[in-house]
Amino acid sequence: MNIKSIFDYRLLGLTGSILLIISQFFSWFSGYSLMERYIIATSVDISNAFLYLFPLISGSICLIATLLIYFKLEYRINSVIINFVGFGFFLIFIFELIPQEIDYITSAGIGFYMSIAGAILIFFHNLNILLTREKSKEGS
Image 1 (cartoon, rainbow, N blue to C red):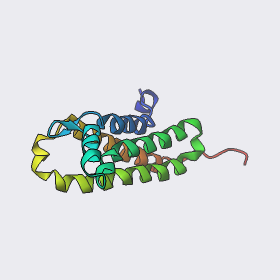
Image 2 (tube, helix red, strand yellow):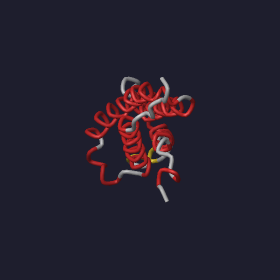
Image 3 (tube, rainbow, N blue to C red):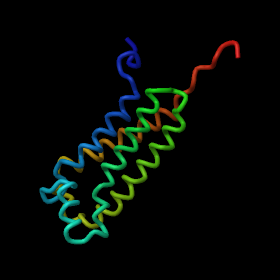
Image 4 (tube, helix red, strand yellow):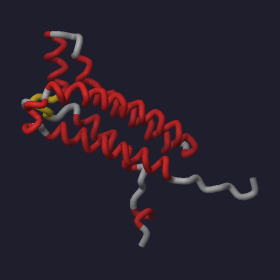
């Protein structure tokens, strides 16, 4: 029994993107979701408010890139490039948020862990795409 016949590795990117998107609506630090923190931040100070939307944005970008592979497999390199753009948004968010919330990292909520798991799945999805070889076409 071959594991590739059971499990489609393209589901890693799809699952990771969905985890990033729905992590936006679960509790991160101090019991608030990122959407609630975005609403609070826009009412007080709008300069850093859009930072809280980055997991939603990066998850959406990665979801579009993953769906691109499902429609046409020849777009897999384009998909990896788009995934890295979305992954870059998430890394900017993490490098900006973690230093601010380092005191509360021990009480992180489920949203934080869902986003980290989603980012890891997207990374392995990209790695899988880059390591797989295309089948050569006979007669060309």
